[in-house]
Length: 524
Image (cartoon, rainbow, N blue to C red; front, side, top):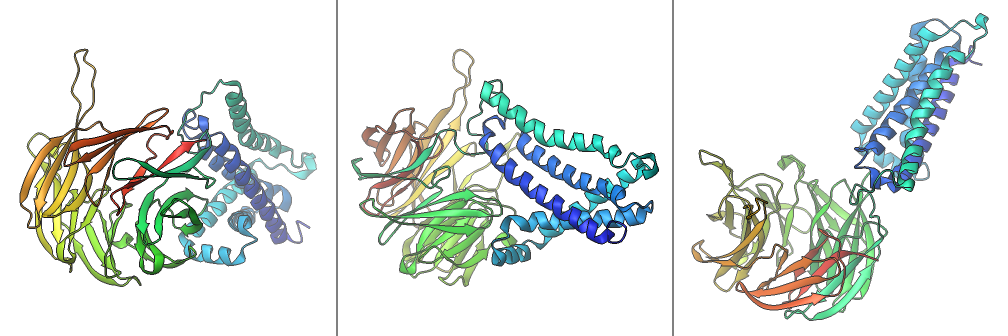
C-alpha cells in the first residue's frame, strides 16, 4: 500500500499522530494539573514537558516516512512527511472538540493566526524528522527494516513517560516538597464565602458558594434586586466567568456562566433591565443578558498599550464609563461610543478609581506621569475631574510621589474624599527591614481645591470604602478576620469574625445602605 498510495499512507500516519497528540495533551493536562504543587520546584516542568512531548511525537511520525515509502528521493520524503505533520496538527487542533461542530468552526475562524502557526509547526517538525530519518535509513536487503528507528522510539517514549512518573513518585514520597499557590487548583478545597455587614459591623448574613474552581471573587456590584459577584475560571481556549446573583437576604438567585476571551474580570456594573456590563483586562467590555448570554462585545485593544484592568461606572441615564491606563470612554447600553478622552496620566497597568461627581460628571483617581527629580523617578497621584461630556475641567496632583497606593474615593457633600496609602521600609534596631503603612485622607472641593489633608491609622489591611460614608479595613488571620470601621479617619468600631480566608483572596464593596459586602476564598 505504501508504494501504490504514499499519500494515503502519510494521511493515516498523520491521523494516528494527531490522535496520540490529543491523548498526550489530555493526560498531561490532568496529570500535571494535579501535580502542580511541585511546579515551582521543577520550574514549570509541566508546560515544557508537554510541549517537548508533542514535538517528539511529530518528529517520530516524520521519521517513519522514509521507512514506509521505500524511496530514496528526499523531495518525495519531505513532501509526504510535511503532509503527515499537517494532518497531525490539524487533527490535534480539531479532535478535542469533535462533538461541537459549530464551536469548532467559530473557534477556527476566530483564531486563524493561531491555526496557521500550529499547522506550520506540524509541517516543519515532521519534515525535519523525515529528513533526519532519510540519513539513517538502511536498505531493506540488509534485513534491518524499522530497526534504526528503535533508538528514536525509546528516547521518545522515555521523554514522554519518565518525567511524569518521577514527579508522581517524588510528590508521593515527599522528596519533592509542595509549593502552595503555584499555578493550579488550591491544595485544599475551597468555597466562596460571602458576608454582608451593616454600617456598624453587625453580620447580617453569610453564605457559601461552590463553583468547582479556585473559589475567589474578581469583582462585585450591587443592582436593583441584590448583589452580583463575578469570578474567572481559565480554560483551554478561553475563560469562563461565573456570575452569581444574590438577593438582599443572601439567597442565591441563580448562577450563570459567560465565556470570554482570555483575561480576568476586573469590574462589573449593573445595566438596564437587571443586566450587566463586564470588563476584562484583555482589555474589553461585554454586555451580559438575563441568562448570562453575551449581547455584545467591545474590544478596547486598539486604544491600549497592553493588558490592563478596566474600572467601570454606571450612569443614571443607562450609559456607563470605562477607564483604563490613560483612557476613558463613555458607551451607551448598546455599545455605541458617546465620547472618549485621553487623560494626562500614566499609562501603566494599575487600577484606576472612578467616582460620580455633580451634574453627571466624573472624578478619576490614578497615577500621574513619572517625573525624574535628578536622583530617582517619582510617581504622583492624580485626581482628574470631567464633566458629563468627557471634557477635562481640572487636574490635581497629590501624594508623596513614592510608593503611594490609591485605596478609595467617594463623594462627600462638598466634593470628594480620597484615601491613599504610603509604604516605607525603614530598618529596626536589629537592622531588619520592616514595612510601615501610613494612610492619608485628602478632601477636594468640586472645583479641585484641597480642603483637607490628614494622616490616619493604617494596619496594612485591605480597605473597602463605602459610597455613603467612611470605610473599613480588613485584616486576615489564620483562624479569623478582623474588621475595623472608620469615619472621617477615626476608628468607630472593631469586630473579629470567626471565619477563615485565604490570603490575598478578599474582594469587597460598600453598599447603598451604608454596609459592606465581602467575598473571600475560604477553606472547607
